[in-house]
Length: 411
Image (cartoon, rainbow, N blue to C red):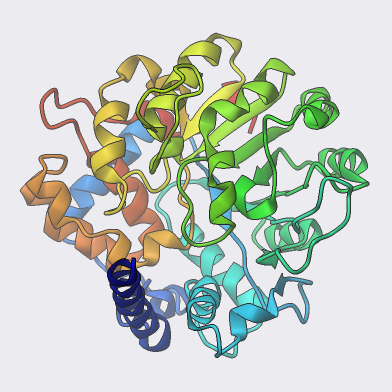
C-alpha cells in the first residue's frame, strides 16, 4: 500500500510539474498568430497546408462549420464568472495547477479581462477560411438534491448571461449556450428564459455538477427540454480535470437513456471517448469501454433523430487509441455525429501530439508538417482539419459528413 501511494505521489508530482511549466511559461501552447490576426495580416500557408484546408472547404460545400463545444472562463469583474478559491490555494498544489490551467489556456495575457478570452476565440474563428458557429458553454454551480447550491464542491461557474454577452461580441461567429442544473429551484424557468433568448444548447458535466442523468426526479426537466426544443450536451466518459471521482459513473453514456425516453434531444459529449464502466445490461461482465456504450445508445435511439455524438478530443493523445477505431469503423452512424472543438484544448500542445497517430496508421506521414503549420497558425483550423484527415488504418474510412452544419439538428 505504501509503495503504491509513493508511486502515485511521484506520478502526480511529475504531472503537476509538467502542467506548471505549461501554465507558467506557456511554452507548449499554440502561438495562434493572434498578433497577426489583430493586425489584419495573413500568414501565408505552404502548398501542403493549403491542400488540406482546400479539401475541408470542398467537403463543407459552402455550409458553416458547427462547433457545439467551446468553453468560457474568467475571473469575474465584468462577467460574473467564479472559480472556487481552493483553485488558487498554494497549500493545495494539485488544485492550484488545475485552476491555473483552466484560466490560462485561452487568455492572451495574465492580467487580461474576461473579454480577452472571448475576443481571442472570436478572432481565431473570424480568421477561419469558411463560415462557422461556435457555441459558448456556460457552466452552472453544483446543487444538492434538495435544491441548495453547493459552493464548496463547485469547481467554477460561468453564468448564462455571460455566455449571451460574450456571443454578442462576435455575433457572426459565436453563439450562446446555457447550463442549468436540474436540481436548482428555478431550473424549468431558466430553461424557458434561455429558449426565449434563442439559446439552443444546454451543457452538463455530471460528475462535476453532481448530476445523475438517470435520476427519476429529472423527468420534468427532460420534458421541458423537449417542449422547448433545446439540446442537452452532456459530457460522457472519464473526466480527470474537474469533479468528484466517486461520482465518475454518472458520466456513463447509457445513463442518458432516461432523457431520451422522456423525449429530450441529447448530444453525447466526446462520444464517450475515454474510460470504461460496468455494463448495466450485462451484470457481472468486465468493464466496457465507454465509447462502446455510446455506440449502443446511438443504435438504440438513432431513428428518433434526437441523439448525436460530438467528436471533440477523439484525436487527443489520451483518447485516440480507444476512440478512433470503433468510431471510424461505423460509417453507418457517422451521419449522427457533430463537430466540437472543446476549446481551448485544441491549443494545448501536449494533448495533440501527431506522431502517435501516424505510427498507429490513423494519419498519413505526409500530413505532419502541414498540420503542425496549421496548429501554429490557428488551433481551431488545425483541430477540424485533423479530424477531417484521420482515417481507419485498415479500411481507410474517414469522418467527414458530420463536420458541417446539418439543418436536421436545428442549430
